[in-house]
Figure 1 (tube, one colour):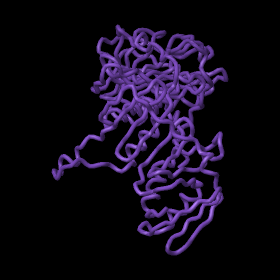
Figure 2 (figure 1 turned 90 degrees about the horizontal axis):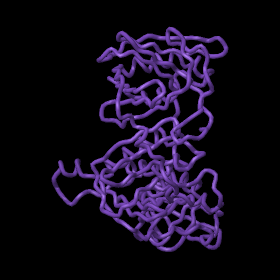
Figure 3 (figure 1 turned 180 degrees about the horizontal axis):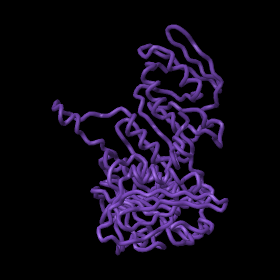
Figure 4 (figure 1 turned 90 degrees about the vertical axis):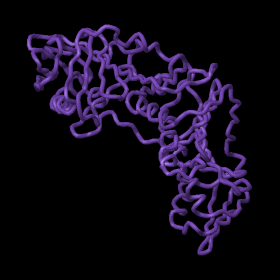
Length: 414
């Protein structure tokens, strides 16, 4: 096989994140070039890039080849040969030999026999999927809560939850009748987001500069009962879907609001961070109590630590109230927001709703607290008694001052 270095290098950069860090099969540390396409696969998600002219079947050790290609001129021609588990590469100024795996050891990419095929605007769908995955598709102990629910019906909704949090967004994306609702793994969502950002774009057939700049990033989606195939230009992603039923999230969305509080995101973020060092030794519990256009943000733990901060808020009906919530989750919601956040509640034991501009609303489940005069808890009860799906959730992460709270590990092997 002969191929220009820059073409193979571009393909490796696109498919590389699908290489698993801890593979169940040794051959998965490699990527395959076969019959005009490059493939990386971790048995759950595969990324495929078209490589016209790349004939034959070759299995490249990913890390070594990726590093080497960065150091060869892009316009050089690369000659590749493989015999058994020996791979040879040569270019105008050098050559390399690698021990790899037999191509037959690499798993095949299953063909997707689609029930439905549909084209959507990826510029609308993918950011919504990412917003859900990044905020609360983090519950690895229950698979249905480690993905993003794409609900197809009268409206198209994207939804995610992790037991303590829930977020959703309705999209102006119609789908044809018969399109199934699916749960997409969070890892696949993040890989799809990277694909949309990094993959070479196929420009529309027009000389109009405005149309070129504003062209939709069209995705072709192919649905089966167990898999989703997404094609964007020359690149495709195939992922297994999460089996199971997503919780009935609509029953958690408050229908009647008792109090609606407006607060500046940066002021609330600062106040919650001020109490976080105490809160992390008290189950991350933070108490919010509001009245007379002010809110007290407070925490108290069993070791005698106690701290509170007061910030101005806007309460239309001046309705006093209070709620105890997980400060880590509130900080994650406030991250990157600058402006007015609206907090809605229908009682201290009911789901707590957060809204900000056009971003997806989020529900935080309340925590149990014993309240005393002044709004600071006398003691805390263990967090995690109840959650969105009525099961005991996993352990909590600590909140560290100045660190991103609840951040996710980047997808792929880099």
